Length: 167
Image 1 (tube, rainbow, N blue to C red):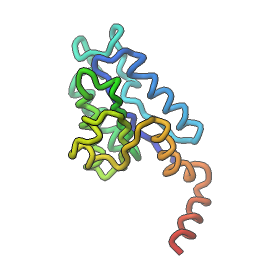
Image 2 (image 1 turned 135 degrees about the vertical axis):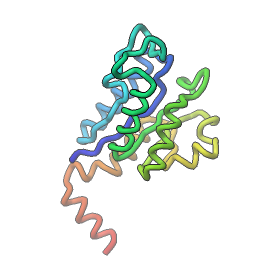
Image 3 (image 1 turned 60 degrees about the horizontal axis):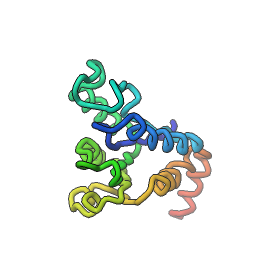
Image 4 (image 1 turned 180 degrees about the vertical axis):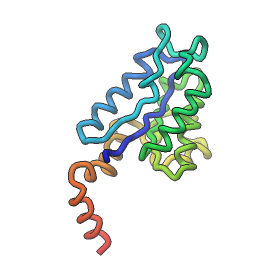
């Protein structure tokens, strides 16, 4: 089974481009390696130019629907990538993304925090919930491919490598 990575990041008040472009880029980079990127926006249609909490889609855009789907995704995916760059954190960081990072940590799932915002990276509780903290999405993709890429390319080679490493 191909590993899947949950792509947590700001959505509320973001333009369609701000919320989706980085996810689309990561999904494409992971797909080349046989890894699935999972976007929480896959079934949340925007209404207008920005994602808002008002006038939400009744099937997928209500608070309970969003939280239920996102908890399920965090639970089902192998790893959560939380993207919280300064440019998307104004006027405040994404509270939902911080919750998703914590859910993943509590479920024993690996986490990668991508941020250049010291309010985020130096916060003791957020810092404790991140397995890796890096400054760019490319660094995060490199870590993900390092962890899961070899299993996708050749599962038997991965098993041999593990045996050799612990022999």
